[in-house]
Amino acid sequence: MTKKIYRIISWSLLILFLISILLILRKPSVAPVPTSPEAGKSFDQKIQELQTAHQQGTPKEIRITESELNAKLQEGMQEASAAPSGPAALKAATIHLEGDKFVGTFTVNVSGKDIYVTLGGKLGVSNGTLQLTPTEVRMGSLPVPISVVESTLRDKLNSPTMRDRMKLPDSIKDVRIENGELVLQSQ
Image 1: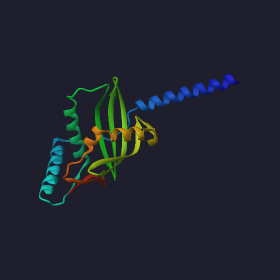
Image 2: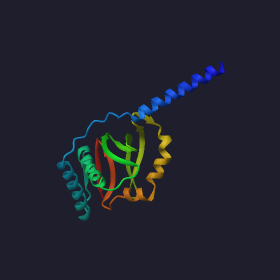
Image 3: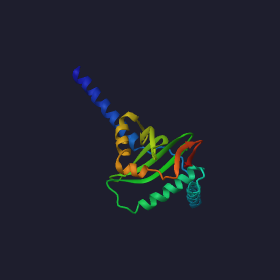
Image 4: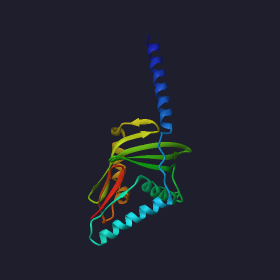
């Protein structure tokens, strides 16, 4: 009787493990975001308007669309792809803006296999630094509880390198997502 229970538990754990691996390797369904060189130029123009308003001492608010944000993200990834990468390399990224939240889907190549990581959350500003508050994490199609990754994510976001990257220019006072658009407000 004990051997039978042991076998049932062993097979159940093996099946759960295999299902988890399949869900992790499964590509999530992500709607493509249309991007164009014009969207990237529009992003640059809006940022320039914000900086000009700041220099003139005039408060200004700009709204960046999902398409503009992703166009600029793709430009940055193309520039970064020339740099050498380690055992895990970021291959692709897409950001969706939904209501007051963002959902980023990142394709990471780990030892020749693509792993899809989805991170959702809210943006804010604290002491001139962009703050990220995660609300969802998935690996492939497998939901991961926030409590499992929160401490690692916090450590990574609070590292000196990331703090430098998340530091906002003096011209930006506030960053938020509103009605599916990224809103930047000057000082």
